[in-house]
Length: 334
Image (cartoon, rainbow, N blue to C red; front, side, top):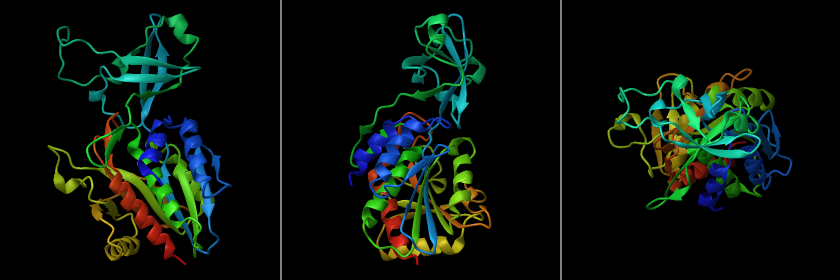
C-alpha cells in the first residue's frame, strides 16, 4: 500500500463536520478492499473483518474542521462561524472554498495594516466575512445558509517523508488503519476487527458515541493526531515528528492495554513515544471507554504540526509505525 498516495486522496476529499459524504465515499471505497460489505451510517463509515469472540474497534474520525455559512449580505459577502476549533488569528486573507450548489472560491477579508486601527487582536467571529466577487443576489442562487466551507491547502511532499496539507487531522489516522488492514489482509484472525471512520468528532465526538453503541466493542483503539514539537513549544507536552506512534496513558484510558501496546512495540521494534494526559483525552477514546458497560480503550496518536490549519504536517513513517502496531496487536487478540 502506498501510504502517501492514500493520504493525498483522503485529505483532498472534503468533509467538514456534519457534511462528511465526500470524505466518506472516498474512505468507503478504500475500506471495501478489505470488507466488501462496509457501509455508511449516520455519516460514519463502518466495516467488519473476521468472526472472533472478542471485538477490537479501530477508529479514526473522518471529519475535518471548517466553517459554516450564517448570513449573506446584500453586497455579496458571506458571514460565517466555525465548525470545530479554529484559531481566529489565522483567518485573515485565507483562501477558502464554499460548497454550495456548486463549489466557488473566496477569500476571507483582511484589512490592510495601513488602514487598521488595531492589528494586535484576532478577528471576532462576528467580523469574519468572505469575499467571493458575486453580488448578494447572485450568491443566494448558489450558496445557502448552513453550507460548509473548507480552507484551501495543497497536498505537498516536503523534505524526507514529511507531507503537508489540509485535514491531516484525522485522515492520517484513517490512512494508518487502512495500512494496518493491508498488513493483515487475508490472514485468519482470532478476533473480530470492527473499523470505524467516525463523523462529527470535531463537534463533540458524536459519531463515535452512536457507532460504538451499535458495534459494542470489547477493546477500542482510537487513532488520532496529537501535537508534534515545533520551535517555541514545550517539548514535554509534544511528540516529535518521525519518532513513531504516540501511545496514550491517562486516567480515562486502560492501563493494561497501554502496557501491552508499549511492550509489543518494544518487542517488534516499532518506534513509539509515550503521550501522558491528565484527564480526558479529547479524542473518541473518551466515548469508547464509557460505551454501554465500557470498553478497554487507548489512544494511538500520530504527531502533527500546525493542527487545525491548512498546512498541517505529518511524517509518513509515523503513520506506518501506527499501522504496524495496530496490525501486530490484532494478530494477538483471541
